[in-house]
Length: 390
Image (tube, rainbow, N blue to C red; front, top):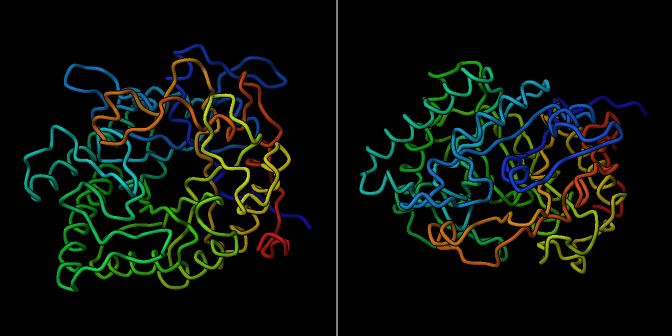
C-alpha cells in the first residue's frame, strides 16, 4: 500500500546551541554538516524550538538545558529556515522548564497580579513572534504554553492536578475548579490574542502531556473551549513508556477530532535506540512492560512507523504529524538538563547530565542513525496497527 508523508515531520532541536558549544557535531553519509541540513535531507520538514523568558539567575549563571532565551532561539530559527524547515515556536512562559509538575513564574513577573501577568504574557508573546518573523519569517506554529496539563504560570493559572498513575484529578469544589479554569483561560487568551495580532499567519497549539489519557483531554478542553479560548490544534506529548498504549493514543486522537473539530499533532515523542545510555543514567527503562519495541535502531524505526500509522488513521485527515523530542542531544561533556542554578529556580533537584542520549536519532558521536529516515519517511502503517501493539 502506498502512503503519503504526514504534513508535519518535525524535530525539537532546542539543545543544539549548547551541544555544539561543547564540541558536538553531526554527520551522515555526506560527511560532517549542519544539523538542520541533515534533518532536511532525511525528510524532516519542521523544527520545534522552545523559548524561556530569562534562563539565567540573578548573577547571570545559565540554567542550561539549552539556555533557550530569545537570542538563542532566533539563531536556531534562522538556521532551520535556511535549511527549508518550517518553525514551531514553543512558549513556556517561564524562565526554565514548564511541565505538569512545575510552571514557575518568570522572576521578572513575580509580584504581578493576574492582570499584570496577562499583560506580561501578551508582551512576551508579541516580542518573540515579532522577532522570529523579522529574522526567520512567520512561524507556522506557535505553542501557547508547554504541557499545561495542570495549568500555567502558577499560582495564577494553576488548575486541578491530574495524577497520571491513578488517572484522576485532585478533588476541589466545583466553584474553586471553575475559578481556576477561568484564570487559566484568561492567560491562554492573552497569549493567543497576542499571536493573532503579531502574525495572523501563525497557527496556535495548546499542549498537554499524557497523550493516551482521553479523560484528561476531554475535561481540560471542555473547560477551555467553554471559555472561548482561541486555538487551531491540540498538541500532545506521547511517550509510550509513560503515556499508555498506541491504542490509547489512537482513541484519544479520534475523540479529540470528533469532539472539538481541531487538528491534532504529537508535538513530543521518543524511543530508545539502545538500552544503556552513553550519557550516564538513562531516563528510558528497557525493562518496563511498556517497552514493547526493542531498544534498538530498528525498534525506534518500527515505533515511529506505527506512530505514523496512528496519525494517518485520524478522521478527516486531521492527524497532522509527529515532532521528535531532542533527537540531537548528544552526550558531550558538560551538557545537562539543568545547572545547579536551574535546579534552584525550578525547585527540581535531580542528577545533572544527559539522561536522554539513548533516545536520540544520532549516535553518541553525532552520526545519523537509520531511524532518522523513519521520522521523515513517506511510508508508514495505515489506520490499523499490528495487533501486538494495541
